Amino acid sequence: MIQTTDSQQLTLPDRKEITLCEAVTAFVYGKASDATQQMLYGDAETQEQSARAKELIERLHSAAYAGRIKFRALKNGDDHTDGHKDIDRLYFSEPRGLRWNCDEIWNRDLSRDHPKFKSRPPYFRMDWRDVHLDREAFEALLQDMGVSVQQSLNADHPDKQKILKTGMPGRPTSKHLVLNMARRRLDAGDCPTSLIAFSKQLADELAKSEPETPLMTPKSVANAIREMWRTHPKAPKIIDRS
Image 1 (spheres, rainbow, N blue to C red):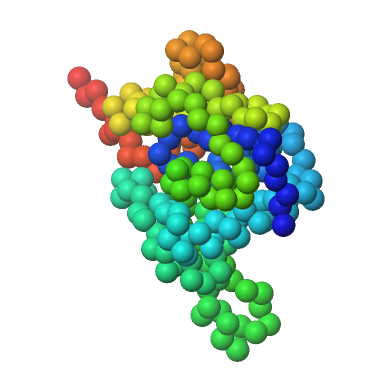
Image 2: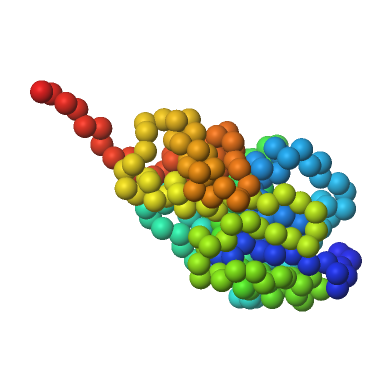
């Protein structure tokens, strides 16, 4: 059982929905981030942190089945244009693999349990990706676990949040700002033809437009927007035949 104290306090990203990875990293490491940033910071997962992550995932799974937390995600095979879908709570009536470090939910393929596959290891497939959950419901779950959540800025205005703060040591992140910038430019067709060039432009734009926020390198930007870049429809190339 995770031991918590009244002094344990954290601040969640000021958005109505947060990613599965942000939820777990905020609780385990004291900072809301994605897995790539966590590795870049060089943090080694301790046995205690691993245990905290495991118990939180179990609680999230149970809360989802009970209807206390709503998960939304992209169904495997869909892209962002198809939109995120609500995951029915009955989906969690069986054990699922919540791979929080990559915002995915995996499921065991029971068809592989046929005797002819007996000599083979179990086969798992990804059902959902880019998994998000309701922030307020997650906050209520944390409070039940004895973890208080600091209120900062208005969750209805995510662009107003510059830095994600926590009551425990850790680095803040500007990922949500970069994702918003990337989405706006992709929707407008205002982007170069390569991810590398686009990531450098976004890193420069972040430094100029939000000087008080934590900077991101082009490499960390590329890792943050890679899936969005891959799945977002690109504007057709204009060929000058004059």
